[in-house]
Image (cartoon, rainbow, N blue to C red):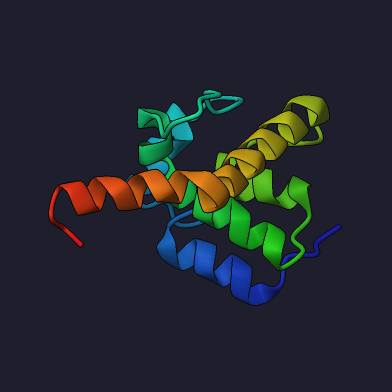
Length: 117
């Protein structure tokens, strides 16, 4: 079942994940929802979980198996509740894609308005 390339797992462990939880991931482990809020604009949940979105997007990009991704990023066991795990994975991956296609524009506009660009 393991499809995750070693460098992807190493990156997750270095930055905080199931095997080496950082303060950021510890917070994400206890605050994520089964599905991100659906909104045409960036939400506070999106802002709080950008690192999670990047990790799930990167994992998908390298062909990681969704079951291993939910174990590493969400600390869920897909053998216990595969449907919930798949929904959680897919909904967060969809929101990560939305961020790369639409959400980033809002971030850029906001940074420009605040004089950060």
